[in-house]
Length: 223
Length: 254
Image (cartoon, rainbow over all chains, first blue to last red; front, side, top):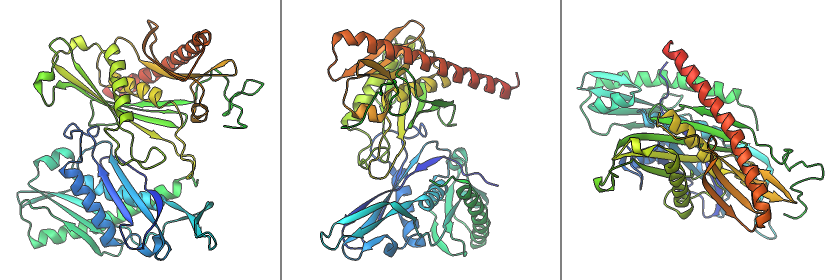
């Protein structure tokens, strides 16, 4: 079974803000600090980090893991904002797969306290004792491939394989075989048949990853 | 904090420890494959990661290269989620810069930089603090100490020669007693706090920093408490290193 390479730590934090529902309710941010690999320098986020952040934002948006309505506390007045910070600790290729996986696992772990609006003071009252899990509607899993000269396709490339590859492809699929995202940033060409192979591999991968994640979540001690 | 007794009559602290007792420390070396050296340490609820790259060629301007020794570059970056309010700028803010500078000064004293002239050693430290509750996101105290201890292990993991271990611990003074290894509650109480980085074999102090007022008569006790705690940390770290080497030699098939 392919291993998820590159470890990530993620902790979505939440604040409630007064604004109308439907505006920037989840803010993902991928950080590739110099500690994860000698190829990254310190300073503002580089190209790779920004591309990864945008990719995660697209995955959240397209696959509708969480519905905006679920984050609404009071329509037109108060909503949760989820800040998803993904920090890479050890970079050995295939950052997009690892990010998606970490994001999903973290979202499944998120517990939001109950918030009610006091009618008299119209202030929010947070009840920390009553927390509920987020309603995760779909489980998108990303599968990345490295392409070599139009012919060879390898799944889950390591850092070295990525560096030597002539192109990459990432497929994000959910449990019903629906495609959330297809990311092929240039690189060498791919025939339609090869693309279909990738899709079927992505379906298998989804099952493997989902089983693993369910196992881990079940084995976690409840807080 | 009103009504909070930092030291009970029987001599027990808020978390049940005695005055000179350390929190539980767990450490692992060689946690990352990409870095030359890495370590992870947990002191109570404070967790720190340290990663070392080097010695390698100077990045950026060659003019910064020192002809007779290595350049030590330390970067401290707290993750955006590790403190109460989500930090927008994890790098470059004053606290991170100050911590980075303190770490650099500490390690310049310990690493045998003369053995690697014209090269650079990068030490990246990232604390990850434990969260107690949503409302009062407490960072358990002793960040500097955890960072230094993690960095020592990481430098050793990278095989960079050092004069000695660098072991750090914090200490405070409450009700006439010196307390070692302050937790967040004790730090927040506002009493005098001392951070000490020690080279245990020679007993030399690499870094000493103190905040708040302390009578000079008491300084000796607090310093001794911190030094003793640092020596206890050294015993622990020494064991971790030996264990790691033992495991590595088994893997190599010696």
